[in-house]
Length: 262
Image 1: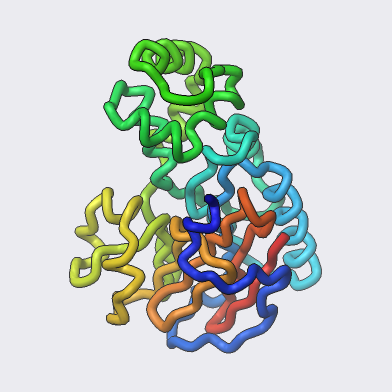
Image 2 (image 1 turned 45 degrees about the horizontal axis):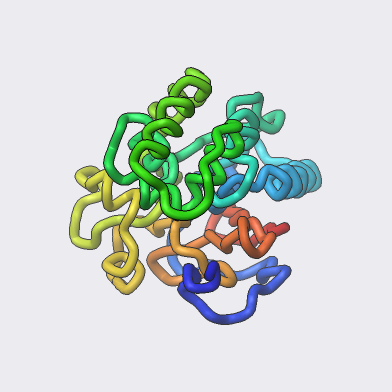
């Protein structure tokens, strides 16, 4: 069941708090506003709605520098993975800088294409839906080795070179002032400069349950929550959009933050 993926069992809230005082001393650079979007997972419909809200928000309150950060997991689970990647390869919102980070599901796709033996794990974690978005079909039920290899070969043939180049070129993190943006989190006690890729893409409890000062407030996705998970040292913004219909964006300016959501 999808609900088992959520760390919080509180009911989803259609409209998270709009104006909250920041609980840490972190700040984005002066003259800048950062919009960071949580895990999309093949929901182009929600992404378009949220980007429209972001554009309207920015137009109503102009600022010299606007940064739009996508936190990773663009593919899998939802049925529009291919369309989401096409969208992210198209020009961004006018007047915005765009940063697209790598998520563990982008890693899944690349490893499947490379022949990694994690295929069965990927297929049950949304990979089948991604294949379908590229018109690669697999019979339901238990996947035999020959079926998986046939799907891998077909997928490699139809997967656009531009999509592969995009996934391979995604950075793992981005820093804006007192904030660090990564997909999953960081390994506590390890400097931000020497973090391991596997942790940045996959870590959960060792990061989520740690209350230490990481040297920056970490804005992350990866672990679905019913509403944004706001802690002194981190903010989780994956609100399970593929299942809930709530795709969340945190808006950071100065020392304050607010949220936009579908």
